[in-house]
Amino acid sequence: MTFDPKKPYNDLPLLPPKVEIETRTILRKAITTGRALAELKGLGATIPNQAVLVNSLILQEAKSSSEIENIVTTNDSLFRAFTADTSKIDPGTKEVLRYREALWEGFTDLKKRPVLSTNLFIKLVRTIRENQAGIRNIPGTVVSNAVTGDIIYTPPEGETVIRDKLKNMEEYIHAEDDVDPLIKLAVIHYQFESIHPFSDGNGRTGRIINILFLVFKDLIDLPVLYLSKYIIENKSDYYRLVRGVTEHQEWEPWILYMLDAVEQTALYTRDKIIGIRDLMEETLRLAREKLPERVYSKELIETLFHQPYTKGRFLEDAGIAKRKTAAEYLKELEAVGILKNYKMGREILYLNTKLYKLLSK
Image (cartoon, rainbow, N blue to C red; front, side):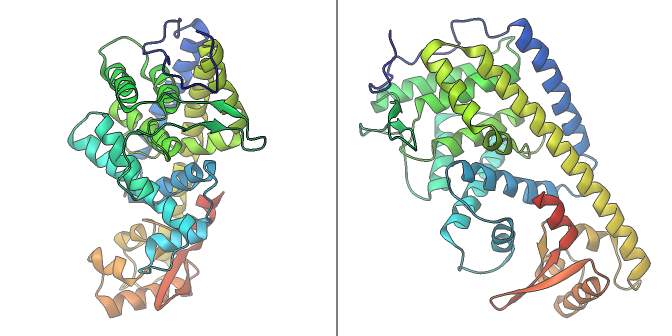
């Protein structure tokens, strides 16, 4: 069949691809990518409290993934909104927080039932979009060039067609075969984006599926791989290579792109984790030297690293201090330069300035 971007691609080939996807070049790249992921997985276990990875790095992934869809917020708005008890949150920040919620929901569901299914994908997009979205059943969805308006792709149409292709993708995900899971990841991501099962939210849902697939295959323990950063930095290549698969079945360049995305992201996240770990140790030393014994505790400092902003209630919830004492502790931490206070509505939030700076790089 000759591909026509203006016609629904109901003939999107089923998986597995009919061409060789484990070429020598791809297999060599998969080895180095796997090595980088294994190092990241081992390093994550060295963080005393992994909440910092979950809260901070997932928010960074949510921010970048949403930016790809032109939903923009700032690190500061995001971290404050995640910490404060307020309804005054701008729409962009709300959307990013919903992405974070969807990613965490997906991870939690996967741990309870290790299956990546259409029902799970629908649950993810409903959280992202905050509605009861389902599989597209109305024709007319197209992917257009943002500048020229030219139609570059028309995804499959008809709910039955879409569900059949998703079912085939599910079978490919769970098939007991010898295909390297990192190579499979590239194939699955292309297929999901090409099926384009929802009227909106496909890109963000697809990027969550990437992370969940790596967890599903036990390649990472926590959903902290920050893939969207790489896609933003190489966005034109991403769309060009997707079209190469669609129009010419050019799988190798696309798979190599995705392998490099995983590898570079794993190395970036590794460095970020090392930075967080070193900063935590530095802060522990500073607190031990400068804070009174009644204030200093390892548990207190670790609580400051759950996320960049903290507040008295977090210390209360952690069982470190009662309300009045928690407020005193935070003031002491500010006095020695570890925290800086900011007013948000009626609340006083305290920023771990060095952690914020590290995460914002």
